[in-house]
View 1: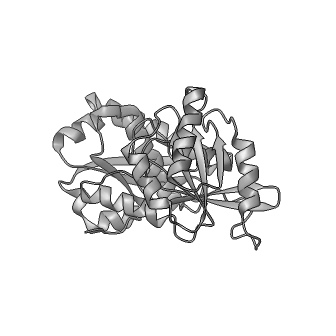
View 2: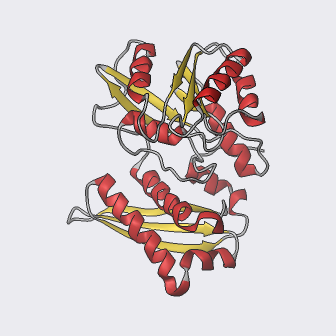
Length: 290
């Protein structure tokens, strides 16, 4: 199943809730997700492959275009396409444009109204009616990915919608992301969580070295790319305090996810125009889009 929606609708939070543990990074900042990621959920004897996609919006720079292309690319070969809508934020041009792109698709389409715990209940029904008038959705669900409301019912229906076949992944695998990719994403999440609006989208993280030591721990070296010296100063913080805090929190979470001690080394590099570098796109798993 592919999950699509506007930025900040709650796609990654929903994937995590359905899988039952964190597989995708989450922050209050829109457009946190940059690449396709597959979460793997299990319901009874059914394995559900959930494709988390970047938010779909009107792209400007090349990175935006690559993210939107990755989002639509994530719907290819999906048995079900689920449109998730922020129930509190409601509809708008972004959502309507996505619906326009979905309405003639042959796949089964689910409509998921998210954030019902903080949304106006009467408006939720109005949103659902308007969206059904725009596209033929097969099922509609009202959920809160953050609190878990409606998630068991959604997961049960998704399992019923999956075609019969062999499991594609081992039972204990929860994502298709490599450990190197996961490590880079966890550090990028900390950049967003700790720096908020100080460093909008001007940074990316590359895992340069990922090595298991003989004592069972993992040594990770990462490079944080920024466009200007002033951005490097923001990440470092006074006396290096901010970069130490970013590293500390990322290290702790990685240790919990990997189940082994982590030695994390961060380096901040100024690289003007990093978002126009083909090699960076390759490392992120994004296609180069003209």
